[in-house]
Image 1 (tube, rainbow, N blue to C red):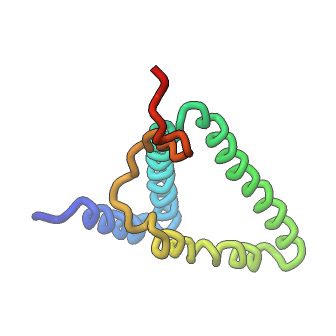
Image 2 (image 1 turned 180 degrees about the vertical axis):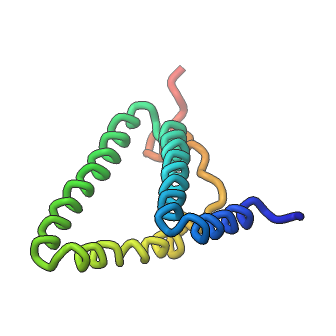
Amino acid sequence: MSETPRRRGAFHLFVVALVCGTSALFFNTACHAYVWRVRANVVVGTFRQTYCPPRLLGRVSSASMATNQGTIAIGSALGGFLGSAIGTRPTLWVLTAPLALTWLLLALSPAGKTRELPLAPGPAPHTGPAADAPSPA
């Protein structure tokens, strides 16, 4: 057979769900999500180290980590507040529903149409009044 690996993978997930039940399917999906998250971290880290100038790399990395960790804390507080106000199950639906729309971030942005990561930027050209002046010898 000339099936693609993706089709075979989807078929195997279907068989796992039929034979072992949905809990095995959720476990399998979680393992796949973890593997893809690790791959994404490697790609993002490599891109950041390649694209950012060395003098700014620490600032960019720390800003990225602060944003990531800060949203985790805000989400935890929001989940706790909503969970006590409206209950656990409605809170899960309220906080999960926006995740279904996250694909729009890529679909509607230029990043979603980009096939390759951009190359490292070169030094910025000097465009001041002295740019055309001859250099002193």
